[in-house]
Length: 261
Ligand code: COA
Image 1 (cartoon, protein in one colour):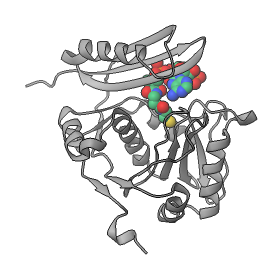
Image 2 (image 1 turned 120 degrees about the horizontal axis):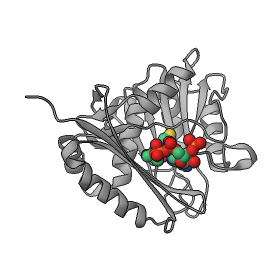
Image 3 (image 1 turned 180 degrees about the horizontal axis):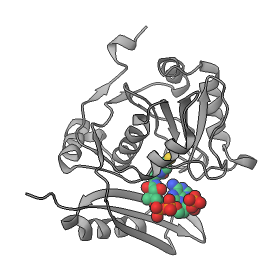
């Protein structure tokens, strides 16, 4: 039997030209209407305020998506700077560079200390910033999750499941699949949202609570890459290659046994 066509559905909203929220997924043709409606509701009910502009884009996926499992999640209690001191070296990132990048995200990585519209790209170990535009950064897009993987994630994460976790996990799993990406560090710029993460390629998604003080209006994303990576290839993969998460391995508490020193 022929497979049902797949569609990318993307939503972004803004008010007075300021970005408020974005969401996206990949669904079979029969689920497009339902998805558009749910994104419309999501755009209208955002903690950052009501939008005066909502863009919903529906586009057929012509290329066979890359399919892969989500990264496993490690739920970590404890002070993020202390946890990051353990996690940066695991990712092959010198501690000093990792902590400097963390501070930069908190102080605003765009010129003038503003937040960026996408991620910065940090070369390891030099610390050189490789994103072509330091206001915009680069963004991962054209991604989604199968129904069965979403059910698995909800079941395994239990009361710790949130839509933010799902969205971030899909996004960062895709980012970490590009050869030469070592890790991604993320701190939301939403003042009320203080949960962040560092994801490490091939290892997992380390969920960090209280990654910034409540009310702090800055944050962002940093993608750490090996020297010699092709930035045009990375940008093209992250923006355009369709990615579908197909399963979820595990939601665990604490650091993996083998990482404890
Ligand atoms: N933050 C701030 N502004 C954003 C944005 C974001 N996350 N996503 C889109 N915009 C604004 C920008 O002004 C952008 O212009 P630019 O490309 O010069 O930065 C403009 O909207 C158009 O962006 P585009 O990528 O063409 O939007 P789209 O209609 O294809 O929708 C989203 C893309 C919003 C669905 C996608 O970016 C998304 O899901 N974002 C949420 C997840 C996220 O934060 N991703 C960042 C990963 S590093």
